[in-house]
Amino acid sequence: MDINNLFNKIEEELPEKHEELIEAVEFFNSVLNDVIDELQDKIDKKIRDRNFEESTKLLELAKKCNELEQKVDETYVKVERPKINKPKHINYEKFEVNNRTEHSLDENFKYKRPYGFKINDRNIINVTSWQDMLIKTCEILYELDKEKFLDLENRSHMNGRKRKYFTRNQDILKVPGSVNNIIYVELNQSSNSIIKIIKKLLKEFNYNFSEFIIFLRADYTDLNKKRNWKRKTMNYFIVMQNKTYEAESKQGYIWAPKFNNAGRKVFHWENMTKVKKGDIIFNVRDQNIYAYSVAKGEAFDKDIPEELGELWQKEGRIVYLDYIFLENEIDTKDLYYEIKDILPTKYSPFNRNGDCNQGYLFELPKEVGAYIMKKSPESVEYFAIT
Image (cartoon, rainbow, N blue to C red; front, side, top):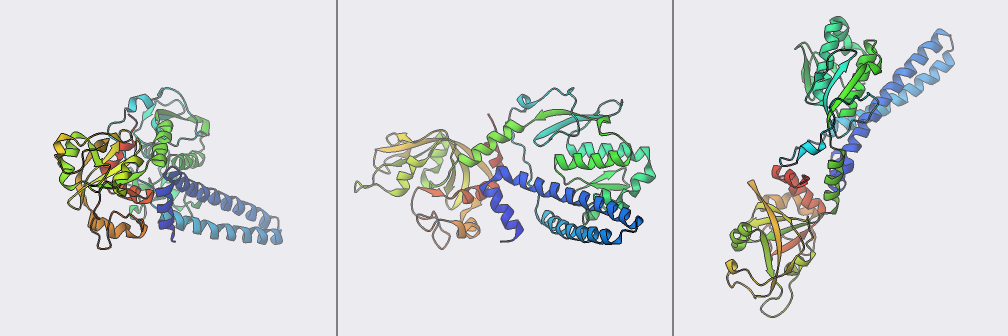
């Protein structure tokens, strides 16, 4: 399994750890960079003292660290940082914090949104993001000493061993941020990685860390804890509604009989009893997913709704749902060829030709459900706290 597949699997199974893992890769890489720089200082000192035996040992250690750093750096380059989608109907006001409270550079800023910063006795400089803070910090330091700032791209301790953080060639950066349209800084960084770069900049320009004060706009730590809890506990289903789709989606439910005409139970109808509050159900009509829905609660006994007519036995079960309709439906036949290797061998919703199997409600493995959710931008709506 290559590194991309490994990280994708982790994101599907443990999404709350995926971001932490990538940040750990970044942090480990940056610490290795510092280790090599400090070893270089020690090597230089040993050479000045004519202690060549010790300098050789330190050089071998530095080489090993450099080899490891290159492997870690290659890993980071291959792995895309997850895109953060902002759900539309979250009440973000309840996550706002006092934007006049001062914060130091030594804090953990994961899941936090900046309001601004100040250096020394300057006025507060407002920012919209951590990337914006990095750019504006760079602009201040650029005006302070243009020549020194432009030389940052040539200073190894200000850049990674293989990745440039500062350069005049924006094409080599993943997300280049312009500093006065002359030099560029890498913006494809987490909040804590940006803070680490700001620390390096302050040290380079002879500032104390205590002179840099951060002000926060919001703290989404609790939001992400609840969001991750939802992802871990929900299950996925797919329902083949076809001729009942219009009526059921309009009224916000799915319904299935308890028995067939022979008085027997059928597994895909019995799956109604497995649905719990918060579970995700993909709604299919004519070989296309037109919506996904969120269960409002468990199934309970209810005779066939009047709008469904007399298609089946009267006695049945109903689950009420919140339907979220997709702007672009998903072709299930195309989808099948993307997920066929991780579908269940028994009671699969699709046959070997990619057509929907005859039946109503089918269970889906979590990795399949998570994969389908990622194909729809509307899916981020569910992960909101209402």
